Every structure is written in C-alpha cells, then in structure tokens.
Image 1 (tube, each protein chain N blue to C red):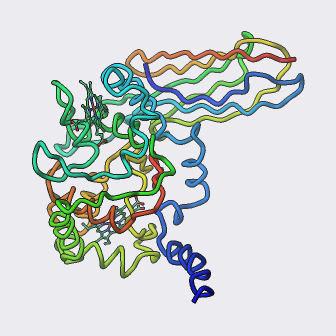
Image 2: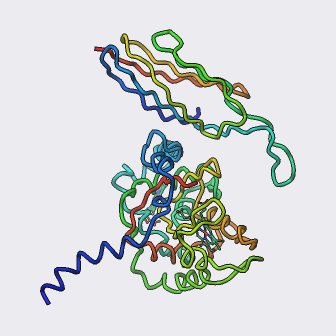
Image 3: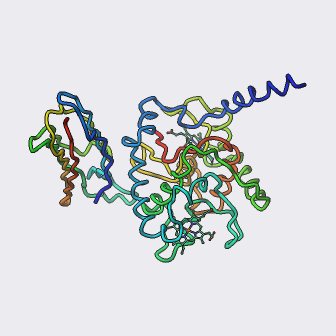
Length: 106
Length: 238
C-alpha cells in the first residue's frame, strides 16, 4: 500500500464548500528516462483518479507521464448530505488503491 | 554596566538572524508546502518510518515522541562501538539486527526522517565531546578545501556567495537543518550525504562513497556552524 496524506473535513454544514487535499506516494516513472547505463526505466505512473461523494462522482482526473512523483491533488466539493467520500487511484502494474472518509453534514 | 548587560539580549537575536536556513530563501509556495503537513511529501516517509518503528523499534524504545525527542539535534555523536563519530542514519542502521539497512535505502530514509521529525523545532545542539574535535576540524578543512575541475571550495559558494544566484538557484548558507528532506529536483526524500554528493559533482569533483567518514566530518562542522538553528525535518527544498 502506498502512503497517503489526506486533508478532508469530517463535519460540515449544508452548503459549505470543502477543500479536499490529497497526496499519494508514487514514483511516476515516465518511461522515457534512461538510467546511468542508458537503460530506459519502464513506465510506471498513476493513470486515473476518481473521487465519489455518497456514490456520486465529484472529481475525476487523468494522469500523464509529465506529472511529478507523489502527486498532490486539491479540489473542492459542496457539502449537501452525510456520506462517504471515496478516493481511488489507479495506475500501471495493477496499481489500485482506495481510501474512504466519512463526512457528517449537520 | 548594568545598562550594557540589559542590551545584550537584544543583540543576540540580531546575530542569529544573519544565519538563514535554506527555508528562508525558498519561494513562498515551496515554504507553504513545507509548513503544511498534508502537502509536505516528506511526511509520506515519516508515516512510513512510523510503521517501521512500530514493527522493529518500539519494543525497546517505546513511544518515539518521548524516547527520540532531541536525539537528532545532537548528531553526529561519538560512537563508542566503532571509536568514531557517527551520523543519525549510521546509528540507526548500525545497531539493529540483520538485514542491515543500506545507506539511502527507502527504509533507512524513512526511519531517519521519523526519528529526526521527533526533534522538529528544537535547536541543533552539537554535543560538547572532546573526542569529536579532531573529526570536526577535518570537516572544517574539507569545507574550505578547493575541489573538482571547477576548483571551488564549499566556503567559496556558501560563505562568500551565499544569497547570490547560481543559475536559477539562490546559494544557501548550507545549514543542515532539514535532513532527510524532500527535494523537488529529486522527486523524493534524500539525506544530507546525497545533498553533499550533489554539491561535489556540481564542481566536477569525485564524490566520496555513501557512508564515508568525510561526510560525517563535514556534517560535524556544519552542525556546529548551525548550532541553535531549529530542525525542520522533513524539510522541502527546490
């Protein structure tokens, strides 16, 4: 499992605009980089990020080889109801990691 | 006389202010990244180190917040077992059972970052240990010795030209306040030794091998020079 740093509020009022911040440990190897011996390291990147809020997709992103290692993503969503925020990163070599946080809207 | 003594504390912060951490010369965006634990990628390695600590270290050392607080601030220290100075990563790699953690391996970086993080905010506090003096003197000599095809010493850049620019970078004063740290150029966490190797190849000198005594000697000198400055581990640098 890759280490992940998440900053997601646990409680909110209806209508609040929440800032979601995510950081995940990943080499994001471009597939173009030769090592000291001239051997090109095979590509190993994250391909896709999806965030759902209570089952509804609120944010999607496609990643490319030009994105730096340990990608940091930040975005906002509007709190409307209590529900689960699910974050999913998918990538090369079968990489697939999901993190969930509960959001209580009072 | 009493009046002069009263003024003295006012003068001290001014003197301290002349020393700048690499942090002070960074762009505001990079500073913000270091300050925010949920945006500082170095914290990923601290988390990793915390997990390794729970598995392999807590049985003897307990809660790192108590047992490791202030430890990093007084390294390099004297190592009785080898009769030589040792840096924090060397100390961690040395006394645990097999498999030994290699220099610059992800595991050793993570553990070192986790242990050093317990001293974040504490002043660098080099030990008053006479046995360290000869090695520190050798470190001072290495710092002022010209090297490489460019024939430059550390001091020529970091003392004589600190604050000026070398291509796109501001030359820092070379205080070892943040190691291991996340360097944007590395896209990963690295040790002070990796940083020093970069400065050596930068002047087209052959760097010493990882773990060489010369690095610990330079670090002893740098730590004395930075005594009292706050530790930042895990810092972020461009």
